[in-house]
Length: 124
Image 1 (tube, rainbow, N blue to C red):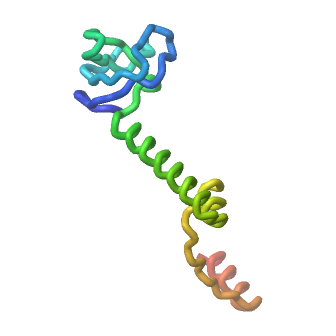
Image 2: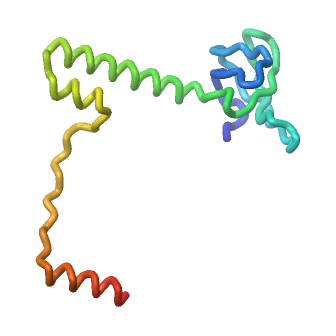
Image 3: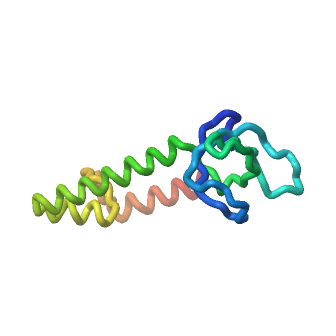
């Protein structure tokens, strides 16, 4: 739930009420009516109006800026991988994998130790 005074950006117009999509605004009130589909009342300074909006129609400005920074970083890494012909980096970025982390070597248990652990867990 967003706080009063939070700076938001209108990202959608789900109920087609001519919201200024892409404009920023401020949360000025909550709509406490249980019968209403709207969650917030938003003040949009550029339009000099207040709008009733649902929580799906707005997003915090910080969240959108972080998503845009991640997208730009990913595009820059792809450009770098293509320019340097680094196939491993390119595949890792395109597959969405995190950087290669050393995998922990788990001990291989003998059959008797495995049965012992199962019986111990079953007893608990």
